Amino acid sequence: MIGAGMGAMAAAARLAVAGHRVAVFERTGTYGGGVRRFERDGFAFDTGPGLLSLPAVYRDLFIKTGKQPLEECVDLVQVDPAVRHVFADGTELTLPNASRAGVVEALDATLGAPAGERWGAFLNRARDAWDRSRRPLLEEPLWPDWKVLAERDPYPAVRKSGLLRRKPPTLADVTRRELAEPRLVALVESALLEHGLDPRTTPASAAVLPYMEQAFGTWYVRGGIRELARAVHERCLARRVEFSFGAEVVSVVEKDGRATGVELADGTRVEADHVVAGIDPVRLQRLTAHRLYGTDDVRPAEDTARDGARFTVLLALRGAREAGAVHRTVVHPADRKAELDALAVGPGAGLRPTVTVLRPGDPALVPDDGHESVVLSAVAPSKEVRDDATLTAAYADGLVTAAESAVPRLRERIMWRELPAGPPARCPHPALAGADGRFLYPSNTTRLPGLHVVGGSAHPGGGLPHSGMSGALVAGLIVEGPEFRGSQ
Image 1 (cartoon, rainbow, N blue to C red):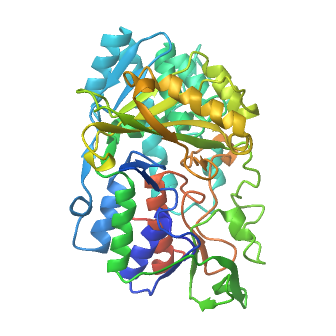
Image 2: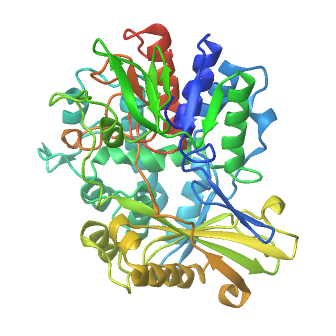
Image 3: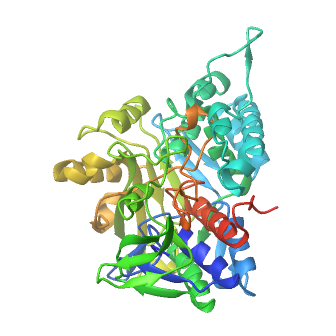
């Protein structure tokens, strides 16, 4: 196993239970991939995902790999209310967790009728898209005939003036036509921006993203999402998975046209019946002399310079979190078009993005009850925020300014702020149907027999749930062979 990310560990635990001896080689000093933690002066912060959707993925992992269910290994709680939205015009909208009726009621009360009715109709169509795409995009290995998924957007076609639209709509087309109300549109756009997606170029099938959140809820792990990574790692250890940290794989060993092991940076060669790589397929290609993907495959993106990256600011605050504070607040900018343009062409120093403010109110994250741990995040073009120190500082200031509308007396309470070390992490999106396959990911199998790919850069895409799903798919393909078609 190359890498100890969440997808790789999910595959490792399942393979170990199936009777395989599993060895994991991780070049860094710890497990979890992008699920990391920063600690200082008694404060602790999640520097990767701060919330969990679709916890059923990890419940299934723990059921299939041991006697202790997920809830006995971590303290998993629903976040309620799910989110508060603060719009540029000063409107504040608080939405309950996993309650369609409650969301409709909140929309009508805050935005006025027929906001709830419009939202409900939109979510009905999104549910249809979810039902049509769930199995092929989440629960099954990528179809050999993947172009069927690329050519057909599962979002239901809408008749206009008695005629079906011929051009496949983008999500921006759909929301402009079906929601109309700018603040309703902003709800959808913010859900896409969480994944670095531009609704103007994203297929209508991306409507499944806000649908998933409303249908399945938002969850938090007490102690931080890093606790989920710890629990998965401990489950792997309990199943006798072997971990080697600080062990960089420099090549995939091949023999007779098949992957037969890995070579480490110190020259050690480790033989294997199967090699599972939890790394970017582009990087993986450099570790082998074999062509991993052909012209008829979904191929990994070579140029990620314009990919959105998660830009994070960690705040240590003096003073306790006020009563009734909401765990997650999304602060919307006045000019969403400028924000979306910046993702495509690069931002200016004065750009104000959509900012997510996480205030867990978790005693495990602070030195005492007289302090608060807060995480601010936004999506920015990765190249600029990585290469320009002045822009990085300006961007951080912009996030703090936006967060002032979510956290009372924010600036006077700041003791210190930190930016996680290293370049901002990419925020790969889940696989989406339509758009000629531009939003699909490479298959978990490669053209080199015995070599599989797992994690957020392979099918079914990015995010904690999808990484866990990729682990289940890879384990199934190895245990049952190419005929594996997913869980039933």
